[in-house]
Image (tube, rainbow, N blue to C red; front, side):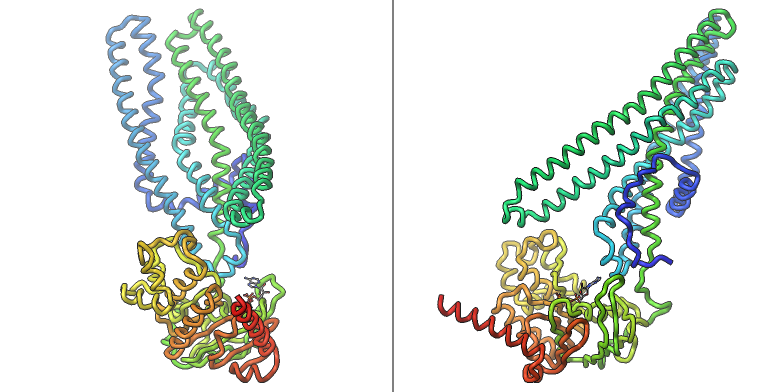
Length: 610
Ligand SMILES: Nc1ncnc2c1ncn2[C@@H]1O[C@H](COP(=O)(O)OP(=O)(O)OP(=O)(O)O)[C@@H](O)[C@H]1O
């Protein structure tokens, strides 16, 4: 089983060798698409029938043409003339109607299938555990939804008009050519090696260039993405000229590659067309001579001519579709790889819900290390009684957020257990565990929605009053009502329309409205000014009276009233106790406290001097 610790390789995004389709590729395409096509099988049967009707009518046209010319025009038989013209008229109308219905059906059904694949992929990503998101670059996941899905869409939307129909056309055209005249049929068949193999001389090179072009386009997009994200740094450090010149170098290299790619692609088409012309002239000259010497009829050479040309175009379509199918096959492989990744944090079969929190959270000699990381936390043995205010402090990188990751079961301990009211959290449904918790993360991520909606995400059942109340407690209500749109204000992408402190307070309101049994704060007040932080700390202390609060912080001032504080250093608990005890002990906590007080004193002195 592949676990979601496995990363999806971004290099897989492009398939240099994907200009051809092997039998395995075809099998893989069918195996992948079959479950998505299954719900539409009745429509596929109908589509197959329509395509066959269209093909059969197309097949009859050259035969009727031959009959019209030989019998109706050359022998001047009125009956034959009328019959063939009426048949042609009716057939043309029928073919047009049938083709139109088939077009409607296949475009509709294939867009349904692409929609289903996209939804399936999105649903799958929702099931992934946190290790997947920590180890897989965002761009890689995004490219599955953009480049790969587009390649699949282009591949499957083209399958009827660019593959199935031309393929049928090639079959019946070959039969007709031999029916008209075996020798002409044999000469006409020279078109197969010509169109199928000749362009391949250039096709490989064209494909390598196209691969280079896609790589360069990827780099260009990456450069634009980085540039937009880095605008504050670019402006502040005056890096615009450098950005322009870096981009221009990349853009010029794209232009060179694009020129080569487009010309080579044109060459591929041109060689096929030139070959077609050469054989066409040969066949036509020979046919004309044989018609002149009465070896074949005039109707035969004219009908043969039409069949030969349409077969040439059909073959060209099929050959040009092969690389499209190859790209789709590569993309299907990428999606298959992603879909094969299984979540690592799964609920055991029939896992019961965690009962409402009653007594205590216990870390029983827990140890953990991130996959592939040298950081290790161990010896975590703590008890957080219900209703307590629990502080976690320590230097940067000491493992504070890791403690929270374990508590929320984003990761499982490698040793020891975490129990809530005596129940190992690995044995209960994850959703029920997290339903009792609310978190304010270090990065206050807001969704691109209104402030009210962002707060409501904490609790979909919250009324407007609940939302206002939570915002009041988070010290952000006054600010929100001062905005022209109030609670309906859109916060922009990632909450970019708000300041860091405002975002943080909206995130705190989102956690409060959830009314959780356990409130988890990861540097929840880091972006706030001293005044707001102190008011918010009062709120958090009040909240802690009725529920459990686990707070990770650098600012020791926020945990002075904690019932218990643990001090982490290099992943281990080095001190534990209440604020006064820890200060009195004179260890790491005391020195951190002294440093923070000294900084605060200096700030206050400077303010007084001003
Ligand atoms: N997803 C991850 N994969 C691998 N290593 C990680 C991951 N997350 C954190 N680490 C590593 O684990 C160590 C502890 O990180 P953690 O975020 O728990 O520290 P912290 O005490 O919260 O730090 P800070 O105060 O700077 O937020 C760090 O060395 C970090 O590099």
